[in-house]
Image (tube, rainbow, N blue to C red; front, side, top):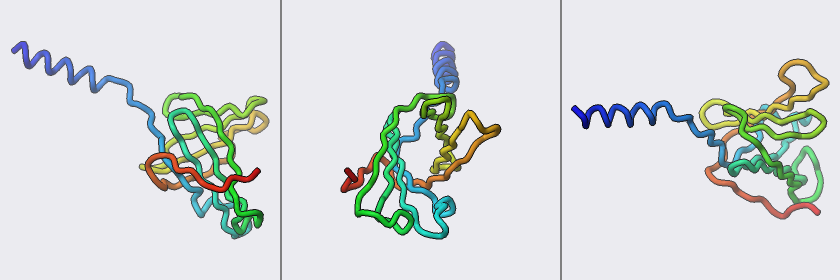
Length: 136
């Protein structure tokens, strides 16, 4: 009886433990959210713990620039079931799971009411890929 009680208590503790927010991986901007007059916009987002990196390819049809990636690295904080990136002046990005594997990145602007604009990113790969060359 003691063994059953001990196992029951352990199962209860594990069931009540806060679920870990894990969004780590590499994601690509969904084609439906490439708002560039029908041109291809290649943008990746990588997440490694509380570090969010945006990789925007400058040589795609949308930007029509050099063969390189502009990168921005942002520190994030956990905010419930989301990651939050402070963009200054009250603005923020909120990153949540979209479906099973995708991401929804919402821009919260203090001057706007409501949810704000957002982009959907599709799952690309486990781990954080890097892209090169980077733009100077």
